Length: 278
Image (cartoon, rainbow, N blue to C red; front, side, top):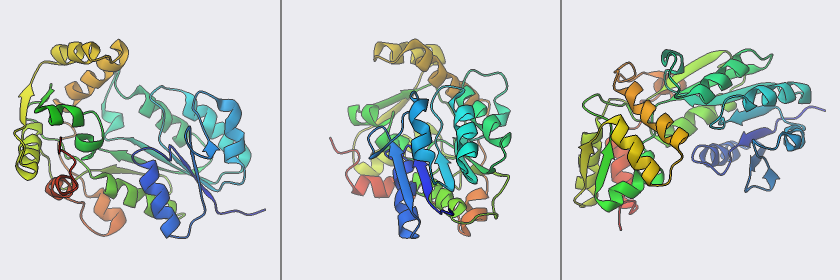
């Protein structure tokens, strides 16, 4: 029996919920799966994966934060008759060397590239929405963002662009097979500049302070983050400071035919929605 259903894993997450909504607007049949969805999916419970993979043509995957499970998922997807897989990964995953950061993403890419499926990898820079939906939000509300990031800029990418690219790739079979897209915003922005833009747009007195990676790790642990997780997050900033990923790419425009959204556009949109209103 032929089918055209797309399975979106992590469907309640930052990218998953955006991708699923776009696919539905394209009249694509979507099976939204997560630990809180009607179609239950948990990376730690592989016994339940076959059920959500049944009668699926295409899968959108956000890998878990541990190496290994995507290999098993790929094996089961092939056995279930899945034809295509789109993987979200991190910008420049092949340039991180022997860093402990990103082992999960490198493992996932290896599993996907070695499969018999038609695959596409989307490597995204840090999201704009980290400032209002994730780890930078609470410090901004408290009035100061403290990170081990200096003058090296980051080409933050808007999650709306990532979701637009993912939806395009998922609905255009064959056109993106075997491709890896590096998704960034149109220019690099330092964290100090990002915080200044947020402060001005939201009319809040917010400052940025640079600390060492060791100080940042200690602060994360004191805030309740596990030692391994704290080390991995701090290691991300060590990689960023090398400057290898500071430049933007044109891959968003390659897929969508338009330039990516500017960081300033995101800031205005989030501030108007009250993202940094205490």
